[in-house]
Length: 380
Image 1 (cartoon, one colour):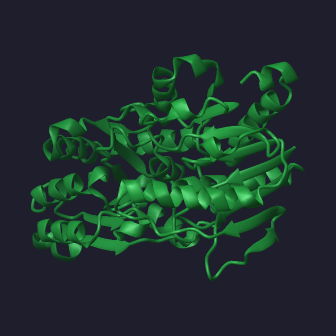
Image 2 (cartoon, rainbow, N blue to C red; image 1 turned 180 degrees about the horizontal axis):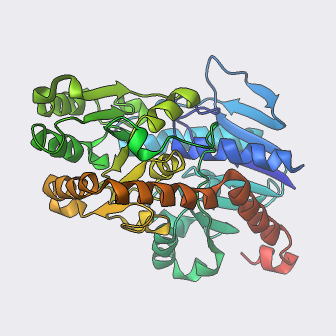
């Protein structure tokens, strides 16, 4: 098959500035190419990247993109301009995958490929504009259900295929009990990620529960990278001031070996997201599971696909504030045997989401679209 993958306006590929969607599709593109498919990835142009190149069997075409603005309206304007640029270089293909807002609307026919919309964020009403799409693909059951509620007439075109867990370079991580007593967060340092809940919970137990523990916060603060900005960081640092060096604000780490080491130095990974209408899957918790961390997440539906409380991970009620997060951490730390068992089970669960397995699911879905009778396609 000929596959085009059009990623967003704000992050480059390879994902040198982060971006979960960019990270996922960069990995999947390589998997598709390794199976003999013709793959083109269109992404944001950067001064350090060639405008066109072939790497690991994947052709990359890069067009002018933008830094993410604070204004949602301006973001949509920039996405429109980027989508026009991407459309102008789109080759003919069987499938065109995209997570941009405008491109599925701008593609008026199927000459560039059947439109495959990757819904990487909680849908906020835009699905009604995508009636020409052959597929609306969700990374979790929660997002698939939300799509079906918004456009029930398109329910038959909705599929659920998860994100792949990045494969560790070293497949055997250290045991939970042999790791430093460190709690880790990796993600955008933004209020919707609930980082302040984690900091407040840790500070409240500095002299008791966390007397010999450290907390590390890894991720971007800069708004152009999706962070909450310097003001939010200063709020966090103010709340953490009594902890001294026991709370570390590391900043973003995009280098894969360095990030892998950070995961493997942590005993507990916490992802206290508050984004009930934002999270679509939870790639960071799945990645932490693959590296053998015991994972604690908020009670968002999107995590239920791969985390069962007390079995493959732990869940706390984020609506009740930092006190419930503190109590859940207390229970985890008090029972190291259960902590180790759940960490092992989480790592085994993450293997179900290997890039190889997930790529096969996507290719089967692509093939089902390409093989549809012509009459069914033209009636969309």
